[in-house]
Amino acid sequence: MRTSKPHPELAPAGYQGLLQVVRHVRASSLGHGLLNLVELRASQLNGCAYCMDMHATAALEAGESPRRLNLVGGWREAPVFTPREQAALAWTEALTELGRHGVDDALYAATRAHFTEQELVDLTYAIALINAWNRLGVGLQPDLPGVPA
Image: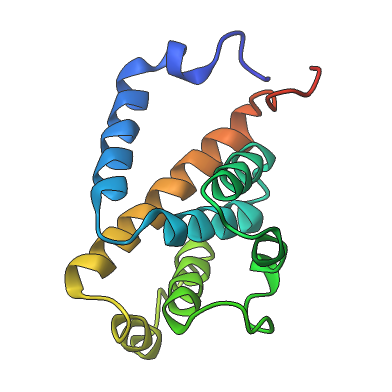
């Protein structure tokens, strides 16, 4: 860990603000299974070991198959994800690797075909949130649970 104390202790108001967004996203109609896949994929792209470990563990505990988790990084080639999950993963990658030109209208339309307007907003919040957590994890490098420091 890079800081002398965990970031929630050093910035409790910021931490509580993020937890409010967590509660909103978890209460949405997206479903925890889909959210686990999105959180894992964004964490892979951002190289956040802490978040990869947390979200893979949560997904396994929720009944996700190890095989599907192993294939999240290659979701385009793996026929184990539903069209809705594929749309969410494509949207996750586009927003996580957001370039100077944003997200094109074709991807928006393709994603929107699988989600209501409310769900797409909630999914976008979920992606923004996991990217925030990833930046805390990569920047501050909290200790992995169960791994000696």
